[in-house]
Image (cartoon, rainbow, N blue to C red; front, top):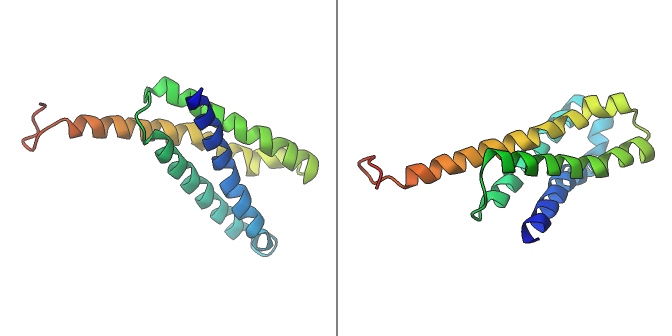
Length: 135
């Protein structure tokens, strides 16, 4: 149950960071849409990497399959909040939403799996002594 709670909290954080920054930078979106899109991509990717790192920091199952499913859970959490908000409240069309925002969420499982693989590799390297020989 603790892991499910962590999954939900980190999924919400991945959604909330770029949404909050986007609200703060909304005036830029009007005057310079390209700059706004670039800043949002940087914010989203940085947040995903940061929260993935924090999630992986304690020892958890780093198998590609479990990380893929956690990444998909985070995508679902983000979309469950985002879709109604942008389609119903902000009046964005579905095609515009998917091409501007929704497609970005596919980076979440990729980042999580790559970071899990790097953590597993780092653990293997850490098991070697200074001669490069496994202990």
